[in-house]
Length: 161
Figure 1 (cartoon, rainbow, N blue to C red):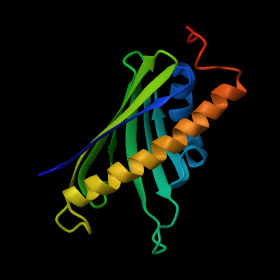
Figure 2 (figure 1 turned 90 degrees about the horizontal axis):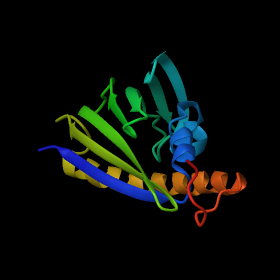
Figure 3 (figure 1 turned 90 degrees about the vertical axis):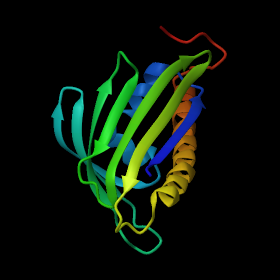
Figure 4 (figure 1 turned 180 degrees about the vertical axis):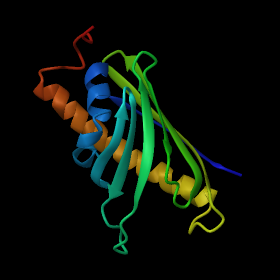
């Protein structure tokens, strides 16, 4: 058995702005509510290896891990996986972007499996990831839409090319 999540949100902002803001790793602590810091360890073209550190959880534990992601701008996808897997046997995520009339669709597909020693099984982690993904996607949507409005963009106008 393995875990799988698939979450999508529509953002009333141009594709280019959405892509740029959500792929600026160094700004993730201000884009996501869960990340305290991002440390880029290596950058090689569109491939980035980085350490993510979360804010302390309700028990005071701080979670941190190394991931690698590779952006493919022409395909409007980003593929990532954990290098330091922690409680996961593996954790892979693909971000998909699609230009829509009046905005952008952003989709996160995650495939993973938990180690037998993990504090939660695949089903439990699927529930946790689904719940948290929705929260984080809404936060990101609101921040990107705010930036689009500040730049004078309106979802009722044609998308810039």
